[in-house]
Image (cartoon, rainbow, N blue to C red; front, side):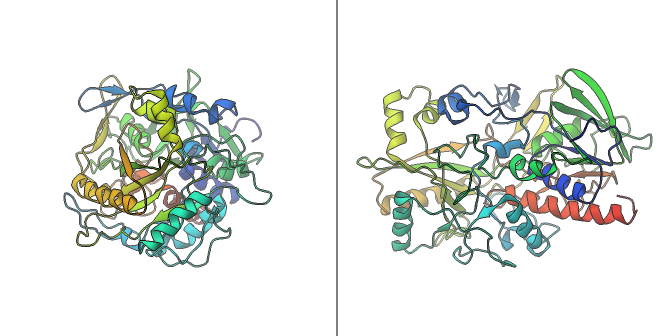
Length: 510
């Protein structure tokens, strides 16, 4: 980064997986790219590895408040730093299954087909895995889609207790496989197995996050500026209401107008929708890209239930447990095809995490559970419903309405998973559900499609209503699948970036 860029070719709003991937493609093509990030760099400090600081004190969580439809206010699990949410993610980098792109039946609401298929994303999945340094092993996941090649890096090996879990699952007739993880592990790697990875920041740049793997490649380039502490308030269109001409940005309390020929919005599904809604004008009274009325609607967040398998006589001293996953039930359990999803390891649950969720839990009991549990995440698809949405209240507060569909099917899957854990040796299996207050897998609020009357974006994430506006994050997802979204966001962003590079190189309109 050299000085302040006053005449960018492209403004990218957000520095996470989507924004970073698009910016990288455009910068490598020689375009002048300005990246605006509302947060700053994540400080490298001891508190990053301190569960008390991260969970009890919420040291890194945003101070802003959102509101439930009931009127109750809360501080969301949003992290605004260079690199976006990946600074605190658990490194899981799954490809969606082929079936995830097709129309899918559910008990309460169907998931629509995507306007693109798995084959459209496959080469970009491969590129994203290389960029993020994903470690894995192909050929073992029973639902694995076709691949043009294997992983460049071998999977992170199971530690003894997790290997024992894998053996027990195999003995139960399942096909566990190494979880694909973006982590710089192995000889010469930065990972020190510090024991705090999932939901913590990394002090050693070992986590394959958007800053470490994308922004680091952009820093120092003469055609790139990464501007932190620049919160985009709204986008401004021309007199005709079609082209976006500027972004209004709060830069440390001072409001600036930043102009460019092309804008890429990648602020995360909820915040991208809020920016579009906040940009309402007489020409666009419902907000930008919202002729269809879908912006802010169809919010999805996955059904997530944590299971603690308690081993009273065993201390779990695993440092990096997120090496194991199970997809045998991705298309349903025996006799119940609608109870389905993914099972994967959680990072080790510590006492302060339990006390943060259950404030009246005795410290000694919470610490004991943390030491004597093996922790799992049960994930099911959250089908899209139009009434699940984010909108702006008159005072500017975001209001979240989320009444997820298919909870009964997810509960049946959770019961099946608990019974499985008991069968492989856990005498006690406790549970905890995660809700919208931790919107780590948020998606669907600016959905793409081929029909401008039913979608906000075309299959390449360009707004139907505005030819020079792209929205490239999980907001574009028509459905949520049942695995972590980060790699699919990266793949679609690389696909969009390649498209824009070709279009702009030929001089056509974006």
